[in-house]
Amino acid sequence: MAQKQRNISTQIPSIRQDNSRPFLTQKALLNSLHAQQIFERGYEMCANALFSLSVVLRFIGTEEQAQEVDAMVDALINQALEGIQKESARLKEIAESNGIETTIGYTSAKTVDVQITSPRSIKFLAIIREFDGMMANMDALWLSCVITDTQYARGVYEWKRRILRLAGQVRQIATRAVLAARRKETSEAVAEASEPQIAETEKVATE
Image (cartoon, rainbow, N blue to C red; front, top):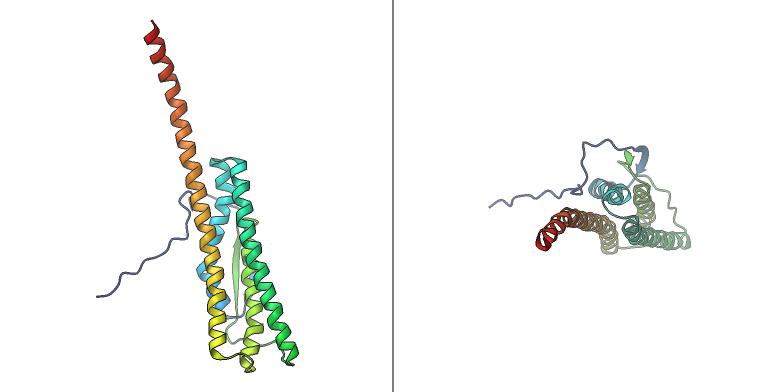
């Protein structure tokens, strides 16, 4: 029996796509297939979540709530970027010590138009670009027989999984934060609406 495919939505529940949002367009050259795949699978999902945190959460929640979530997301993004930069530097050092040139070519490099819809979305794009640069170092070592096929496949898989997991974490954090703020907003509205009724009931009871 053929399995029914399930499409994973990249939208946050509170974001209306017909609303007009500001954006900048940046062109990004992605050389490796793996960076291209991460962009296609993770960028829009993460960018929508980051927009939700920067804008939507502040409309329906408090600034204190938003700043708390911002700090959590910033820590995740900075940690991921730092990890990729360290690994890229390590691979480049190995290549240099073996006299290997890390400037290599790719058969199907792609330039993508990226919509920057929030300040943090450009940070996630920086992660993808940094990963693409790291892949050049890893590819050079693989083509020069310094790392094996198995090591190469494992390394690519682990880093792609980390970055896509980050996009998923950001989306999950955004969804939970927005839903929590909306529930609080609803409960406060119900409480305010019930106060006059309670006061009227008490007044009648005392007459």
